[in-house]
Length: 103
Ligand SMILES: [Zn+2]
Ligand SMILES: [Zn+2]
Image (cartoon, rainbow, N blue to C red; front, side, top):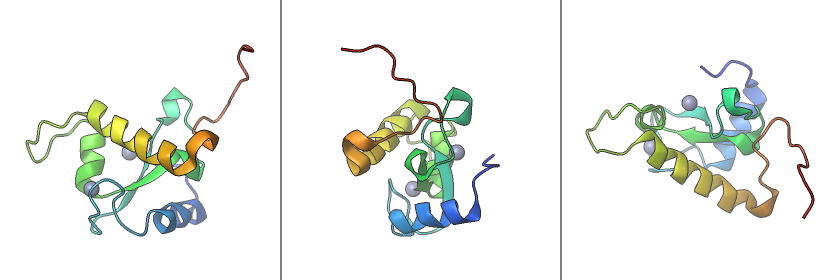
């Protein structure tokens, strides 16, 4: 379910990731996935979106199609590393960032 992502945003995500899966470089069955789920406050901005092939996407949602034993947690870790590497300290995946606390 990726309602709310505009076609423009989707294209931008594909372009950024070179029209291939960000995790396995596969170019087939590409889909856009939310790094931080909408239900957890993730935004529909490109910073929170990543290009995944259908297999990686399924794995990111906890479906182990290939019996690799890779869990959704492992996938999330890789996705967050990819995006945080890409945007470094400017990575802002959340829809609402509150400047919580000082320090
Ligand atoms: Zn993949
Ligand atoms: Zn997804």
